[in-house]
Length: 292
Image 1 (cartoon, rainbow, N blue to C red):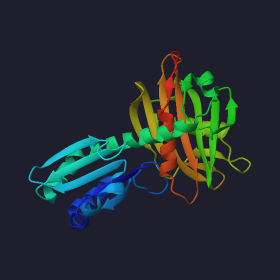
Image 2 (image 1 turned 180 degrees about the vertical axis):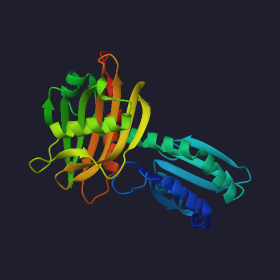
Image 3 (image 1 turned 180 degrees about the horizontal axis):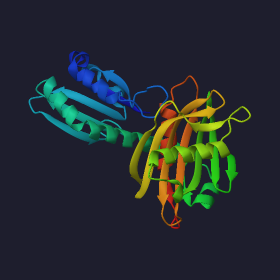
């Protein structure tokens, strides 16, 4: 997952065009404790770009041509697949088309990867109904996730991995808890929930928002609803545990509260990008019942 195949001449790969392409694809995946790239890059020379080498889901292909242009193709060599083809008389023209279409290319690749991850998750979905019955939302998540805690206003599910675990928590917060200082309010809500419901390994320890690093905050829309998106790092007060989290705080005007969908990972000493990508995919699968 999250890999892009880049096809261009070795000369261009070693010079400005290759550098720009690696910088664009290697932009930091937000909210991780250590920098990891948005995409892993696989470079292929044009002369060996055939057969199995064309099976990648996401491809950027650069070709020298008298007609300078940029095109996106679906399922050109395989299925599912997105191919971005950039051509030009020289590397400068191709670099121009890359820079002009960088955000579009990234968005299409990300959407392609979300679809693929959703397909994989759908192979073995959980049949649990507690989240839907309590919060009025449906989430598509693997049956490997098991309930850790289920109280009147809080559900915590978890999947064990080789070196740690993946977690999803769902809860609601009164709309009065968000003051004019939105960022501080979100952190305060997270920390109060962590203190009440997410204990650490040691007595008196619990999950809080990492104090040393400011999270990323965004105002956005989620399924048409006003939403505050937060990405950052959690830690455990009075203990030495930490990891990344993503929090969607979604406005529920009908019930006059905020619905929180949050994923967090504990996986020391290993890459966390793809784990966070799984949690974001599950969160984005949410669908709302009519009463929410």
